[in-house]
Image (cartoon, rainbow, N blue to C red; front, side, top):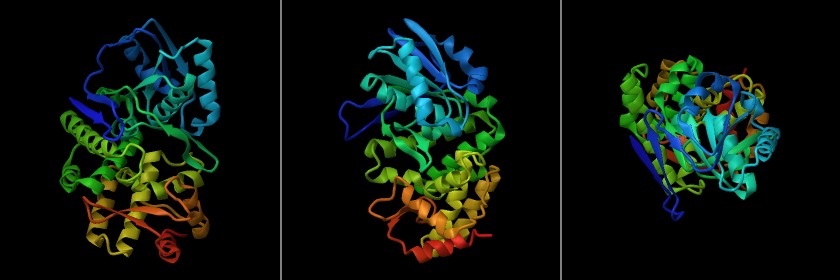
Length: 348
């Protein structure tokens, strides 16, 4: 099963997203696999058996969002220089969204740009993070504020990798799936309400549809000048939650789930979404064991964090909201009093 990426505004930028068992990957160059010890323990041997290259190296980085930093980027670069990779060399990102984002960013930097491919091993990275070319790292000011748009040469999604995924990590990926459905496809949302993602064929169909939806968006808008911003539904709030909790309390998808609840509360306040639709989304999040509550201790401070988000500009915050299930609405310049009133509903 192949989903193509064909960037309409970037000539000759195409690649395939393959959803199937990992094929043999043959490269007439040096290759470095970037991964972490957790993923390596489960999947590195299986990957290495599928890769043929002139030289094959493995670069390890610590596991976790806390290590998604410029220090880690420099450590990866140092190892690539030690292995004497050149401009024709290639990187393979084996892991979840953190590994994919960092590997892509390193690929964009090393000798001004080398090729990389994505082999995502978490549900979140398979349906979202590996598709579309967003790369980067976090800093003390916020999430993914340092990075680049840099497209991979290919993405290989092997659903069998998910068999080793802890339930909490799996649920975090479902949050991104729900995001896509609420924004773009009511039929898909209704499918998810009844779907048993423990069923292999259902899971594969779910991955396919999510990837198709994201591909349609990325093909139109690689660098988030328009419709791609809609993919940040739940993220404006979720990124603040991650920052407030030092990226240690919630997985990214869990923070997004709470952010979706907050965004929907604002959409209800603005008469974009009905109370029934709001409740439907809460129920589907709960169905997949995702968190839906968060206590905001300081509403004003939480609000100010919005201005550190990449989607804010000229002191204006862009909110991505549901215009009913299956449709979206982008709203700027919502009165701070209205937003803070919503935030206060999540207060102590």
